[in-house]
Image (cartoon, rainbow, N blue to C red):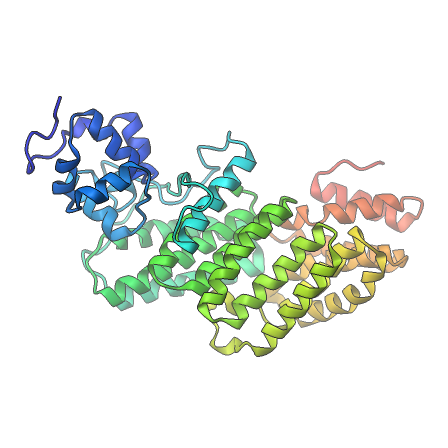
Length: 460
């Protein structure tokens, strides 16, 4: 049956409510949407007329070409009569579209390696403009809005989003992602609606960037609370918005953060792939700081793989790029990476080498971590916790068990006040090193205390 019948009549509403169609709309898989319409008797010519596309464009989309630009998606929704909320383009009572998952994503049953490939495909499509690794990017949307957005927005509205993001990021640094993730998600529910409001091109471009950074923060706080699928979804949305806003350095930052998720999951190969894409965006942006951040994290990935030559080479380049960078002019999402963070990365990477390759690397790790810890203020509690944990590991490796145990206890005491799953996860190597030295009473006591804090099994 032909549900359109003429160029001007819309598809009947029941078509959009069929489960297969709803799933395709939620994932913004326009090729699937068009194929389903064809099953309902809608011709390519009718689709083209309704959406304002040429028949050749419709044909390319049917063959699998992705549609990612917000304006094009909105035009397709309007032309076909799709409830905009079904595609996450606007919000209304009938659709209650989800912006940001408050729990793990609905596809969590998929194997993690499959999810990584899908994200890599999505990231490659955005970064280099082609689906180099495939075209299935997964779903990047979820959670209902509560307050109606204005019909028209100006720069003041965008600045409010930016100000909220800065304030929430400060809470994340000081108290952990669990302290503010729900607030970030709530802010997204409001901010995302603005995409459907009228605005000048200048305002809209800045809105893309503001919302990209807010999704970036949502991804980071999700990661910090152990919600990895939600983190991936937010980072995926952030990439598309950052590209729409023409901010290559933000694209680089988002990819650096997603790579960190994979490092945390001990998947350095996958992390490197994401870091390499981020490096392309960083170099395109011309930001020495962005390039330096990516180099430092690539070094960490190589350290996890036990490749000390590549690790040290990339750390050297990170130092050089940082020396050339103007931190004062860096955007908010990159400004965190100052001299303390560079020292912390140097210390962290050498800690990895000390565990993976040779304990001699503690000689570089210990002073670098000590410098970073001394430079952090109370507003960087989570970073202090990470570095105290790494410093404790180094002193245990160096044979200074008494001092190492004392530092480990400090890390636990600091972490107990944080709402961060990562602080516990980062203590697992400390637990292993303390367990190896159980004959020493200080190491045994530390192992038991770390085990209690992290909920891990101890040999006791």
